[in-house]
Image (cartoon, rainbow, N blue to C red; front, side, top):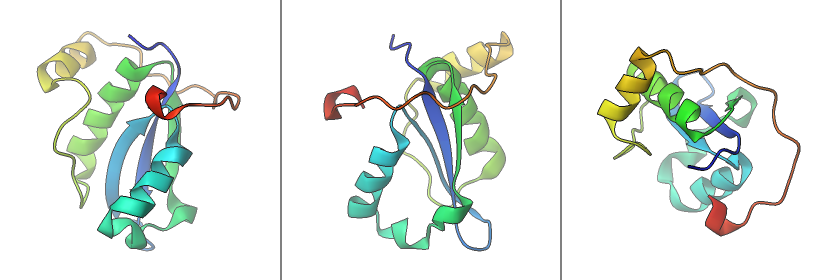
Length: 113
């Protein structure tokens, strides 16, 4: 399992409504990809984007699922990075999802996403 820090990002519109929640080890690169491929990207207000970092992808995936359930984003995802039962088990067991400071910048290749 990739133990690098991973971020959960929440994309909001100008009114503060939740559009999309996802995780990535390189959110800025994901934003570039979304801008090219997602028709809803024009609705995103970059000044309201929230990025929170976690110690690894497991922690980020647990928080991502919790955000999906609590926030009911306008544009959902077809699947989570890990199965829902696995993430629910981690959450029930109290898996550490404490936010961490953003990591220092390091190059990320397309394969690492």
